[in-house]
Image (cartoon, rainbow, N blue to C red):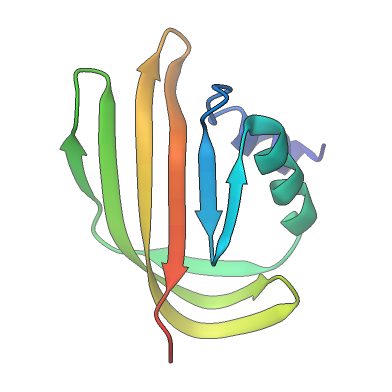
Length: 110
């Protein structure tokens, strides 16, 4: 695992229900998400995240949503330029700190 992937994966929960949905592809479980991250490691991505709205949905869990703009990204084998989208992230407080339990990224159709 590359150092960049390893660093990012440290923030993802190892609960079996952890999930990641990105651009139409569903990944469940830490190992599956790690494999998907390794597949895209090193691909260029330039993203701008807008204002993040955070809502507590329990004593140890919060939902964060934000608009995003990809000025350049490789998704699968497709180069995406100037695409508007959105992201949703659920985080849970654990003894090891905050951990991501779900993420979802999507783009608006042109």
